[in-house]
Length: 123
Image: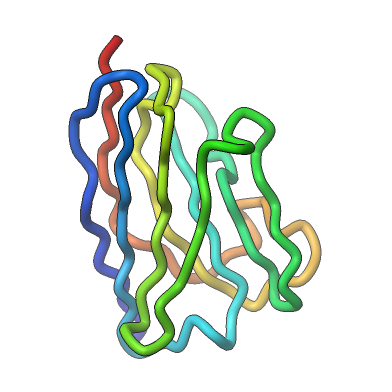
C-alpha cells in the first residue's frame, strides 16, 4: 500500500522560510513523477513545483526563484523548500506522485497523495 506522511507545515512571517517533507512508504520516488501542490479553500488545487518521469521541472510562475523541490532517495523523502514566503502562499500543501510524463503540473495526472499540511504566512 502506498502511503505518504507529510510534515513541516506551520505559521511563518512574511519573508521567512519553511521546509515541508513527505515520506513515502510502499513506493519509490525514483520511479515516479513527483510534485507539490497547494489548495486554498474554495479554489482548485494548483501545481507548485513538479518533476515528471524524465526529469523536466515545472515551477508555478509565482514561486520561481523562491521554492525548490528535492529528494532524498535513501530516505524515500521529498522536500519543498520555501523561501521569501508571502501571505499569498498560505494554503494546504500536498505531495503527490504518479506515472506522469506530460501535463505533469496538473493534479488530475497524479495517483498518490499525501494528507496535506497547512502553511500559513502572516503579513
